[in-house]
Length: 157
Length: 338
Image (cartoon, helix red, strand yellow):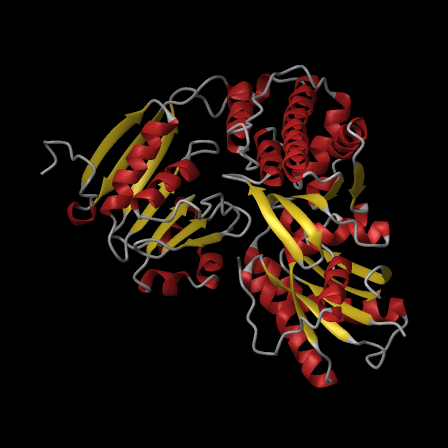
C-alpha cells in the first residue's frame, strides 16, 4: 500500500492535482473520495475530468441530485455522489456493477457510505479542510493502482 | 374542439398526474410527495423514490382523471417526463405512460422536465410569454434559458458545481435544520438580518451566465465553525445567530440569481422574465426578482406555487404544445437520467 499526503493552497493547485490523477487513470479505475461538506470533492473531480480529456464544453458539476453524472472522455467517466444514498443496496440499484465492468472510470464522492461495494484496487482520496482555500489530500492505493503522474514518496517502495 | 392531455411526472420524489385542456386550462393536478419518507435521510433516496412511485402512480393517475371528470375516451394524448432525473424514478412514469398509450391507443409525447419548468409560468399567463429569459432554479438545476417559443429554448448558463436548491439543503444541514432546507431557510430569513454576514456573491467572469454555489456553502461552514474547521461551532450559536446566517446566505444566493437574470436580459435583449422550479417558491427570490424587473420595465412571470414543485400540469402543458406541432414519440423511447 502506498500512502502519501499532498497540501494544496488554492483551487488551481487542487485542479492540478486532479489533472495529474486523471491523466494516470486507466480503464476500470475507481477513485473513492471522502471528506466533509465543502472539502472540494467536486472540485477535485473537475480536475480529474480534465486529465481524462473530458471536453471543456461538458459541464462537470455536482451529481448530488441525480446521483450519477456521465461524461465522455478518453474513457467514459461515471461521476457518482453517494451523499443521499442510505447504503450500498441503493448504489447497486443504479447499475453500479455494470459501470464497474464497463471499462470506464468511476469517481465516487462520499464513498465511505457505500464502502463494501467498492473494488479493492482503487485510489482512496481523503480531503481535509486546513484553511480557506488550503486542503490536505491523503492518497492511498495499492502499488499498481497508484496514479503514475502523481509523485510517490521516495520511501514507499 | 378541445385537446385534452394527461400528464405524468415521476422524475424525482414527486409522483404526479394532471389533466390539462388546450395547454393552459389545468383541470386537475395531483401530486403525491415523498417528503416524509425522505426527511429522515435528509434528501431524496432514489430506491425509496422508485418504490414509492410504483405504489402510487396508479392511484395518482386515477385521481387526476376523476378530479378532471374525464375518462380515457376524452384523452387525446399522454405526455410524460422522459428526462432528466433519477433513472429508476423516470422509468416508472415512462412505463406507466407507454402502457396506457398502448392499451388506450393514444399518442404519447416525451417531455423534458426542465423545459416544462421553463414553460410553467405560461400556464399562469394563459399564453406563451415569449420571448423571455427563463430561470429554472431547484434542487437539481440552476439554469438560465432564452425561450423564443415552446419548442425553441436555448440554454444560456447553468451551475458549474452545486444547484441553488442543493446549496439551500446543504446549508440547512450545516445549520442542523430539518429537510427540506429551502422552506426552513425562507422562514428563518424573514426573522434574520440579511446584512449580518457578508457571504460571497460568486459572479464568475464578467459576461458569464453560469453559476457557482459551492463557495458560499463553504463560507457558511467556516462562518459557523471557524476558518478551515468543519465542526464544533454550531453549539455556540443562538437562534438569532442562526436566523442571521440563514437570512444572509439567502440574500447572497438571491442577489446572484437576480443579477445573472438581469445580465441575461441585457445579453438577449428580452424584456420578460419567467421564474420557475422549486426554489422559485422562495418568497425573497420572488420579491427581489419582481423588484429588479419592475425597475427596468421588464415583465415578470413566476410559476404559481403549486407549479414550482415538480408537478404533471407543466408536463401536460408543454406536452400539448409539442403535440400540436406533431412532436409525438413512438413507444420505443427510453427514459434518460440526463
